[in-house]
Image 1 (cartoon, rainbow, N blue to C red):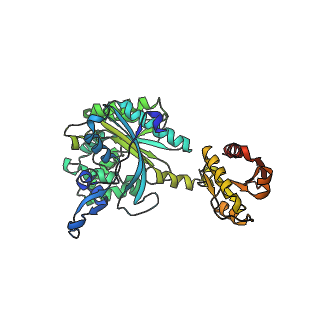
Image 2 (image 1 turned 30 degrees about the vertical axis):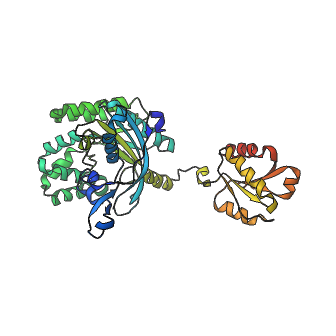
Image 3 (image 1 turned 135 degrees about the vertical axis):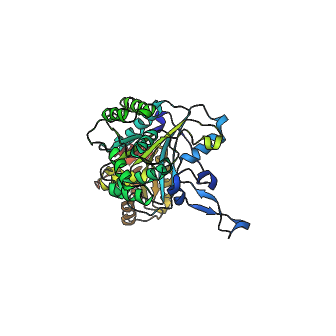
Length: 415
């Protein structure tokens, strides 16, 4: 899917120099980084020089800075790899999980945000999600609202960290967080009230209200307006909602920020935003960039709870299993397996030859294999292969010379 939008694949190492990661994610992110202690002669010092990657964005920024002369001026990449966070496991929250990222480097055009929103919307729609909402905000709009509410500049990072937990701990919890961070409760109440958006308020109405309230952030509001307008020409049409409380706690965001929400999940299925300064931390000059990440495990959790997976997905990792009923036929079974694999099927052979089918059948059932090919002496003498559908329990014979094509056609019809 991502390749249809012009993104190219990229992989980065599981670990980075710790200096590469520290200071990019805010105070909470720094606490959640898995550190790797020094090794060899430095073992026992308790010092760390490496760390497991916390996300895929900072490693990308390091790669762009390192290989800038070898990359196209406008670079689009996708990356699907695990990341690690020293977090407390909970529903939809893991210490190791896969992120599915898309990023575009080299342009400030709002087309970048609109295309990324379209891409992730198409992915979720194909997976069967119909009720997701894309929350949209802008870091400069957030700063403007915090200023208007009376939050001092020195306290705004603390306020953003607290606001990022709003969907998990509610307004009272955020107010308590504000107070714990030294922000007066009256300021917190004013702040939270300023961030309120009616559930049925259209993005255009929210943006109009913002223009009247925050004239000083005219460019940021205009950027949001452009993203909303352009996204209406993509698969994200009708899914966007300007949510002024959206904060996204990562400190490297500089512009539009985005997040995917579904009704029955505290937290998001994914999110992202513009980070025009991050590459500059490694390169010495700013490079415009924007990205979006989907959380694979969270998507699987929600799809499992909603029973969204089609039956064919539960069949397992094998399309066809071959049972060998006599030792003299093992070579023919291997040849049949090779022919089936040439048809792009996933094939396994039950390794123990024997005259009875009970063990191969039990094993195939345990692995959710849909088709069993039986290589037996009677079938071999007739120039045939017996093929059993393990869902319907019906069995037919296929000519040995064309058995691979015959079985492949049957498997694809059932899929």
